[in-house]
Image (tube, rainbow, N blue to C red; front, side):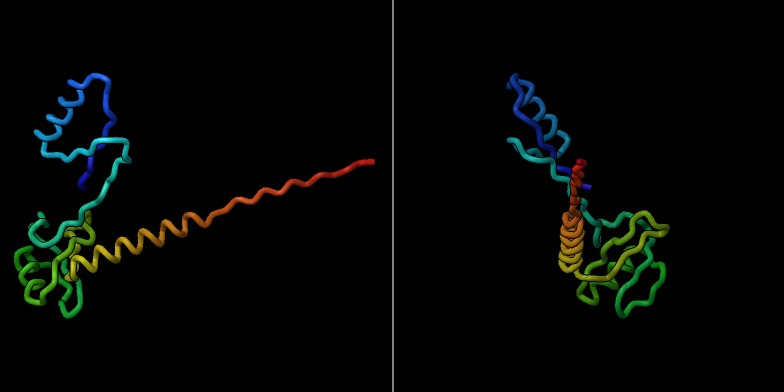
Length: 132
């Protein structure tokens, strides 16, 4: 998971520049100003998959456990990418699909979830009774 670090300008400029130097030494990006921290999950694909063996699913592929190198080769023969779908499974589940299409579908799902979450509206009614 890649995280972009954001922090506010401190009164002591030396501390500010020291934090920038520390982030650069760690190889982490930084953004100046008052922005939200952006956390973006990066899905492993092709050579970025670290597992030795993966379960491969997809169209025109026999669902089975393959060594990672063989699975990547199978995906490249079809002109597609090997994308890690479930990294916590044993063995990890990978799908043969175009990576840009996969990212598009993920963004679309997130947008739909966000739209459905905003539709929750609480209505309040007050009832007044008059006694005579």
